Length: 170
Image (cartoon, rainbow, N blue to C red; front, top):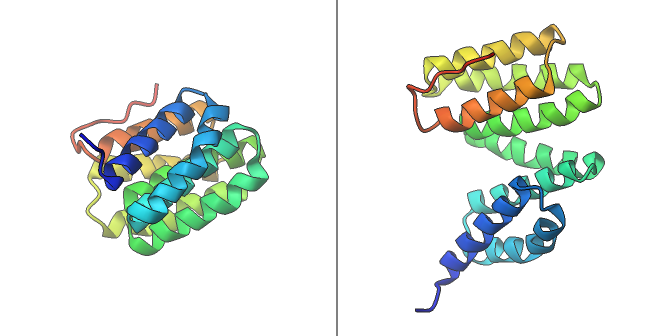
């Protein structure tokens, strides 16, 4: 059976994400141009944004923060404009992790504050809103740690599909 062009993109994208998340950054970087080309040809606007988000994440994980940041900002701006609260939260937390490493507290605080209105006006369940407020308060107090940002990101990723999922800050 021959793969459809859309299926070809989906497989490449999933492989890209798997390589990135398992730390196989060189392989992920090598696959990125093909995945981006497939997204451009057979993907939606959202698909193209998600591929760019992966690109930024790969660059950030390679220690290339200066290259990752403008891509993160571009994708985050699109999510903000589209009103995609959970995607906005996830990419904001990715950016917060990057800024945390650089001690850029004012920018982390801005990320938290900009997303809050979207959280309060969208259909975002209470626990996710409370978690975002915790993020905002920790950013204001300059009391965030990388592990906390990662736990909040994991929580937001799971909570978008399961409103009963609870955040646990150990």
